[in-house]
Image (cartoon, rainbow, N blue to C red):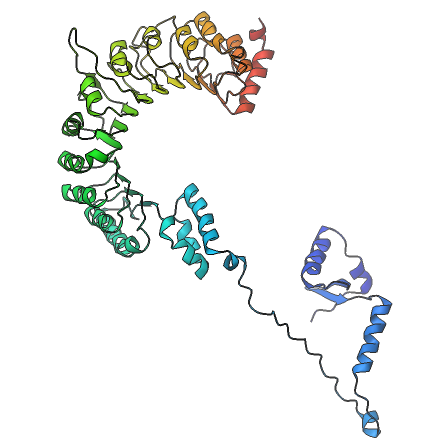
Length: 529
């Protein structure tokens, strides 16, 4: 053993390192009511008992003497008997502590796991929790927790042979998981499946009768038999997401013919096969459809889409969300003197955003929304043919989000210089998000339009929380007035605003950044002048 240092050197142990070591040993080794000293050696740290209270030491000495056996004779004086070691009294409650995890009732543990699954999904949490102990494994195995699952085979994108092998390996695991874990599955997403989609959908149709949502993303070899089999077995299936997957139009049409009366949501990628699917929708095969989204794929299709608006309104009268994203579509002419269609009385969201010039005009917008008083979100990004007067004539009076930004098309078209006041005067009390980026309104027109958000209306501040004025002619005084009047403003985009001082032309996110922008605008020389 190393030679210990002297007592004086041990008593002089000071500093953070010595105190931390002392605290560590005290918390773990020192029993209550005793004292210990630290002695520092060349390569070790010794913990030695120090002098305790005199009465305690005397009491222990008397106790040891009383426990010694009394002996007499020369043998006792010649050689003392060995002192027996005191044995610790047995603790009746001593035993392995199962821990707090085993003491939680199973129902409570399942509820806790359910909160985590709702936030982050079942995987990989449930798989890891099942390895903690048997009690956690039983809780993680409850089928009620496996209601939303995303399946993607590993080694995706590493060659055809590797992908096929990985899909077969995962399929072998699913043959056990489907009946034992997925009996209450409601939402299933398949990503990057190339060859085994039919086998997976067959298992789903056999063991997942409560399925309501199916998403196929970047999946190939989706057959008609698989979709029809799924529609017949899963009677609660009402949502189908097929964007960015290779699916024959005949398979989708056959699926809609079987499950159309109960379909609620449908996502499609526009291609040359979309005409047959739209024909089924226009034929009223999905009368209860609420969400319809049609967008271009990775390979942009420049073929115009001819969409008869009035026929779609008759075929899908309960539509609440309509998205035609990045499409070049042409509304079928209604003809002179033709009556307007029934409209979409339940429509709450209309998205016609496009990165290129489209053919959406005031007349088309009126045909779409003439019967939609409950519209809440209107996305017209890229629709340069729309005018403020056309937006003013819409029947919706409580619009909350208006996205009318122009991206990359303002240089080729003559934009309106006036009229922005028509928008804010109509919806200033309900607008939460406003996007006017790229519009050509003048400084004075924007000042009058944004002045509608100043002051309180009915004792309440404006609800505006997001404002995008990128590339406009807004001035510093106008921005200062808007920030001061809208205490809930959390996003402000002032990029490329030519009338603002340098250093302030950027996007501001959060209340602190927006207030900092206000301080800079109030103190800058240009704003004061």
